[in-house]
Length: 99
Image (cartoon, helix red, strand yellow):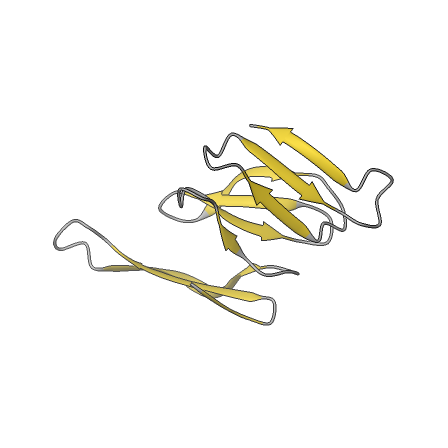
């Protein structure tokens, strides 16, 4: 995975023989901040101006969306059960989410 500006580019390899390389079309994923993987690698965390998306699965589709605006940073617990969002301009800048 790499990011150029707001565009997120993904390419991964299948463990099954004959499946070939899997890729997401460049530019289909957009992020306003740096993209990061969850601790276990289950989710790709994408921060947008009006929400935080957790993408996963074979096609990297949005699995969970948090409707939190102007988030600057996201931290996920090692067990991937809790998420901390930080939005410095919000009334309550720190919010803990229980998945």
